[in-house]
Amino acid sequence: MSADEYIIKLFFDRDRRAIEEADQKYGKYLLTVAYNILHNEQDGEECVNDTYLAAWNTIPPEKPASLKRYLCSIIRNNAISKYRSQNARKRYGAALCIDELGEYAAPDEREAAAIREVLDGFLKSVSRRDMTVFVYRYYYAYPVEQIAAHLGLSCSSTYKILDKMKEQLRQRLNKEGITV
Amino acid sequence: MNNDIMSYCGDSILDAADKYWKNAKKQAVLRRLTVIGVAALLGAGIIAAALLTAAKINGLIPKPSSEFPEAIRPSNGTSASPYDPDAPDFKDPVFTAAEIGALFDEQKLEGALTNAYVKIAVPSEDELKYRCMPVPQSDTVGIYKIHTENVNKAENDPFTMEQFWNKVCAGLGVKTDERGEWHGDDLYIRFSDNEHYFSTFSFGCYTGGVNKKLTFDGIGITVDQTMSDEEMKDSLKPIRDKLCDTFNADLPDIYIERRYGEYGQYGCEDLTVTFYNAKNSGVDINICGFCSDMIRINFTNRENYDGAVVSRDVLTRAQVQYYHFHCEPEAICEHTGDARLISIEEAEELLYKGYVFGGHCCPLCMAQQEKISFENYDKVGIVYFKGVPFYAFFKNLHCDAQNGNAVYARTLVAAVEISGYEEYFESQKEFHKGR
Image (cartoon, rainbow over all chains, first blue to last red; front, top):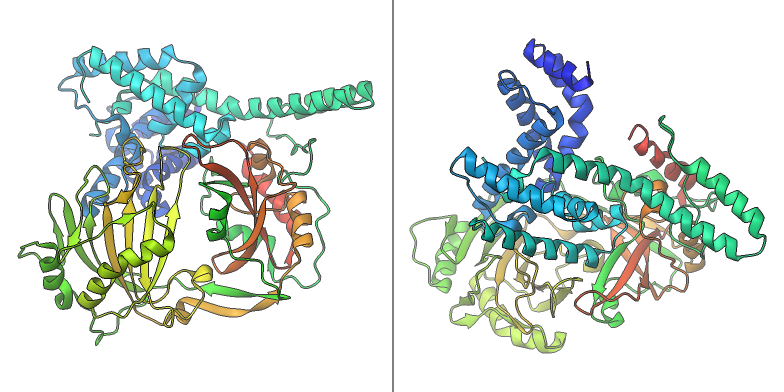
């Protein structure tokens, strides 16, 4: 049994060690995801706690194939919602980099699957490096400088990669009738 | 539910990106080894160097266990990274290296940003004089403690929302029954008493996508960034006088800050004007920032969505904020004493041995940052960070930004005697264990 399977089993058994084990394995990773969006450690920690609560309340019946991915998806949503509500009060805060790609609320699962296919198809068509730059900027909200430093790129070339890919993705989505 | 486009991204894509990210660290190590290997082969003792390089390559490839590679020593001249053991032994240290590192240690997370240096984009080298103070011609330098604890406004303090709300609304042409906070389509007005040790009265345009020129009592709140600082100060006097009159303030002095980036066409990314009273400021604003009442106008010149600069000349997206402090400047920026200012030569020794600060001070992470040699640096000055003085070294990278701005690397060396350099930098490697 893998470590993730063990943790999921603890959730199913309603054993509170599930939270401890998940925190030990993914706590720092989840906090990084939240911090990149919120830029505040306290808010990030709150999001992590909310994530564990959401996981406790949804597993079961959910049985995620990838616990890491499942928790990441929850905390990302929590952090973005928190960011938006904080900035709705201020109305003059900086925009989130994630917003640069726009939003689209798919009306049903069929359409969500269609967007997923376009997006995945696009990201698979570019180099692994460019895909990673894009994912780490617009999914994990890492600062451009950090992405550039980690991948051995300059900031200006990283911006160029992002710029080009944003435009290409926009064109692909428009072609499929998806306007963001 | 969040509906940003990337929320639809499939797991296989995210897994592939995570894998590439993880492997990128190893690839960065191997890239540098290739550089070192080629440089060594070109020098004398080719065969011996090649054998040594091969041994280093084998030793440096991470093993599946928890071992991590040794920090790599640069081969092409002196550099700010990684660190060189045998740190200077100061006789009268003021801080430990751990205390200095903790000033910057704001991110204790996986993937924390590591800075052996930061990059600064400026239109010309002359602009750097605003990024640091001249090195003083004295043997000692001041140390300060910055207090950020909450200080409540005094009960009889006349600075209240009621005192100014109607006047500000009238000045902006806003008619509202709301009090304390109001949001219109293009503007907002807000009062706050809960900002640590000051209260604020704010109003302005939203930063994103709105090109509304702000006027107050018929006077436009704009600046023309093509003007010199002196020309700009003259042009701002009418609005300064109007705002001071509105807030019953005496703030005759004007301070201008321009910030530039590497990306986006033309001009600065944002520009801040501060009206203040130098007689009341109490402390050097270059050391502690502004700690007395001030009116600050921030002009945003960068689109939120794509980073493009909005205007080449006149900036109109203004946010105005009046800061009213609840305590004296000395209570915020406390002068705790003076210490020996180490010489520039002593600072250079620390610089070339890699004992620099600015972020996560880990020699392994620093070794993976794009290598920059600070030999023949272009400028040195003094900056203060959280009340502690540093030598700031600037080096022109000679790779202009996309918008034509020059890009300088800046790194910091503690300007006073510090103990425990080697132990601290060595201890930062612990961060990587198990990752």
